[in-house]
Length: 422
Ligand code: DOR
Ligand code: ZN
Image (tube, rainbow, N blue to C red; front, side, top):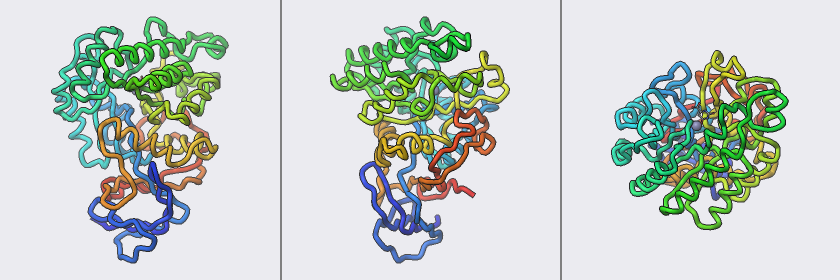
């Protein structure tokens, strides 16, 4: 394995921010010092660049098995690496769904050697049907760290309560897709001024807020952990904030599109801007940013959800979802860091340290003996998102045509360069 020397680079992790030389050998950070005078196979001049612990995206859809025309594990991992991501949790709404050890093993084996640590989420319920809990011990033994029926809520409160009890016993994190389907009732974008203007059925924010509150109450009753997926509303952010204050073991995540964009993007009737939960209003965007700043929101994830151009060609019938792995860091920098809202340490906490902690994995720091899972980025590089340049098989990005500031340029996985911008 090549030795790598990073010269005069800004080294940033969740706690520190300093200029240093860094020497990498045998998959590990070996030395962190002012001026390292050692030969290395690869020397990178770090002037103007930052090196950080690589990102961990705990909410992606890799579509494999079953929907590999949208994405497969190899292209998904390629997209991850291009975004500085070396670890993911991939959601189980594949075909077949990941409700048994065979599917989990298939995913882990196929990802082997990619440079991305892929942790498949197991289903909460058999066949993601909402009824009948999966064998959590068997899933855990196969490598599962978290369970979810993402894409759908667990409609029965009783089933969710049992799932929380059982998963808690097994040390698995329950990731909940919070949506009340009786309220949604066929809605396709946020319910409000824009849905009225477009004459389409809206998705009432109350749907998300209600099930967020339900999950918190259920989790509290059995002293279990609960992680709320893709928070998009002011209401659920506030509910989570209060629950945390009261000592409930609740954590949550949001996605870049929820703190950068509003439902006004839907006025163009382009299904690439449709996802579930949907883009909300300026009020919600502000609340999400507030939640990130004050620690209510623990993680930034992408909900990377590839769909083909053909599927996305019909505004009203298209499936929900947007790709995001290759734009998440740039979007977070653009919306949160370059605007002075949060520090780079905080971005790393949200995108790297906290997801790893929630899953029981060791966070990476920039110090000797740490695994060299690292991303080198140009924080000030301005680039325009062109869908065609994405590594993902699908090009359904909400950031198309937007100029973002900051870009990962080298991604190291266990000391090996797995992505390098040309
Ligand atoms: O927008 C979404 N797409 N939300 C989900 O919950 C599921 C996901 C998908 O699988 O496409
Ligand atoms: Zn999802």
